[in-house]
Image (cartoon, rainbow, N blue to C red; front, side, top):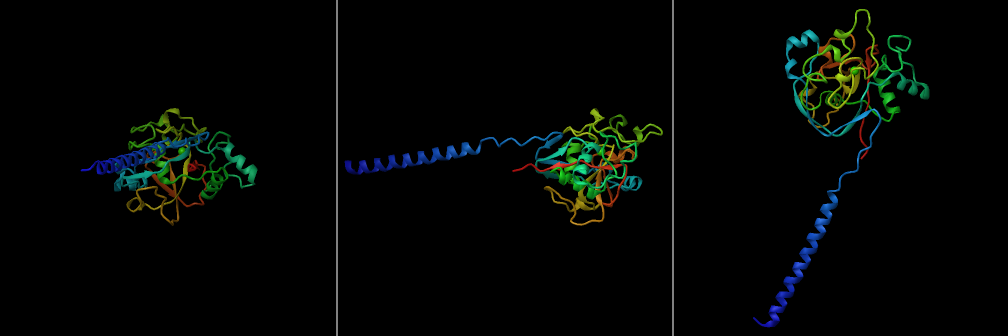
Length: 279
Ligand SMILES: [Ca+2]
């Protein structure tokens, strides 16, 4: 091989090597940039951020006809659900918070504000129907949680039965078993420190029942999507979660489903809000 040919081959090899090195360097720089940590999500007072991921929704241990007939609730079958990240209120919405909404907008007053058992400022607002809850949430820049979001916030990812664990404890919630004779009223939100959920949400068992965004269908879990379920498209009733002060502790299980018409107003029904992080 002539010196001339050797020179040409050497030149091509060097040129190709330099080209490939440049490409690799650029790729590495691009890759490094993509590994930058995402901007921190905003934090909101009195809301917790529930990380994206899977959890088990529903409860097979109570999925039988005896229990359904005895308690008229239906909360199976268990199934794995993936949810995107979201915020949810630590507490039920209070009378004080709701009053700001009423004062600012002229919206109708809750039906329970004339009842001294339910109208103190730090008690949950009750006597609000589903449309009232939706209107408040919109005013507050939030929304109602889906049924799935509510359940994940209540039980975390370990399938626990109540927000604090798997054994019922009447001292950790305001339900029928924990009430004193003749005294049946809601407690100030956040009264049960030992009853909070794995994510730090209070009163997800008992005190006020809580409206969810979803319509109710007792067979929904058999057809619901495994990612971010939003509830049936139509329905005559809306989902309630968490049990109430006049209901047994079984209704306060994290997976227990209940439902009423959206126009229902009761001293036992309130709500909390959720929010989708801005991209
Ligand atoms: Ca509650």
